[in-house]
Image (cartoon, rainbow, N blue to C red; front, side, top):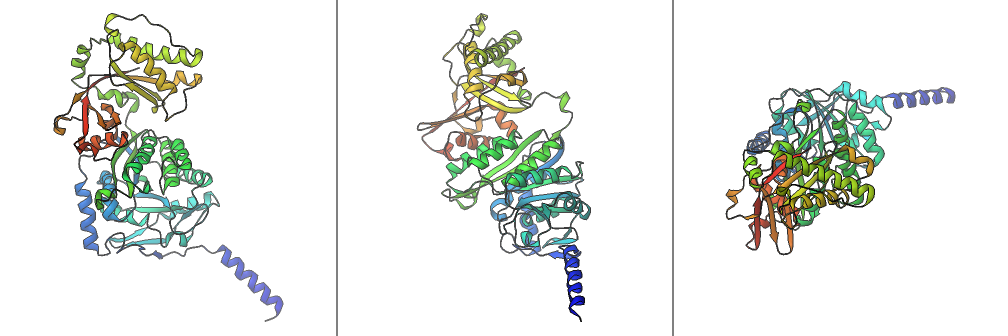
Length: 503
């Protein structure tokens, strides 16, 4: 062969290689962590997964279309029982397309890798095909999305989800996505790509992530609570900011932020935290734990015809409480006016006005004022004891919620018109004799232990879908205590009720 012909051959071969797909059709993605993260024996694995799903009880009703779930990805003995709370919601659903998103633990790269089209993902419970058409859509969308076999061959974060999907769904295909370096560019790239995916009831997005890693349960629980607060409010930007500044931690944080953003773009307007645990709940060692969260993001049905979630907290006991406070409808309306006028005046003129009020609002009272913007929490401050007349308590708390809540920047003047104000007027604290006395949806909780204190309003437990035990645990976390601290002999737990009303 002449040198000229040889060089021509090499150029054609190089062109062929460059144009060849990175993965040949029919490629098999073998399990990487079977026998390590979960049993490799199909019967044993099926029994473990079914046991987790059967133990997931007291799930909240989801009135609407599920758009995404967030699940952990540790060894199934540690996190599987938490993930099951999210997968349980998918039983008997029409879902047949699953967009799986997670981080790269083993292989460093920039951008996003989709391991398809033409790849068969093998599992002890059977083989799963990729949705080739959707994989191709993503590959054509941006050069930052590629097919990198090395990013998937040893990665566990998507693999451990497959046994649950194979148990709760019948026929489905996957779009397996791994994010490399989780910088802002990668988050935007994945967000934009996910928005290209179908938004119907047959498609779901899944973010695979564990939360804080290897911290004492007390410190780790605080970090996870900050992250869950962002999630509950669908505030992906604040979650991303918290990830950047180290206030919270998710190993799959970039992928989770992208899924939240895409879910909101597809109409998600509600979140429920289904379960929160840490690895210490399994091992008994709380000195170094990993946090696990299961959550669902969904589009509530006919939301325009429904009251906000918090207003739905009204119970049959509210009329009795309102009568006890001598708080009629004109009184509630006046308190809401006072809250808004106090906040507006302080932000614009740095002063709180004086108010003339009826006698019933001059009685001493404890209250919380909550601010929301576009359905998201914007501030919440309250007084738990009646040290001022009720109207003054509301006036002061409205201002403090707007400018002094450490979780948020101060409210700006241009935001005031967009704020929704809610007031919770509290009954006196009642020491709990038995934890069986607690009724979710009626009671709020406050715990004292040493010089630490934490309080959660009655509506919080309903919003998160907590049981009474989980409500107790999260009140401990709010106080900066271990979640089991309520059982300590030197812990004192109080309950209270509230009349809740808003604009």
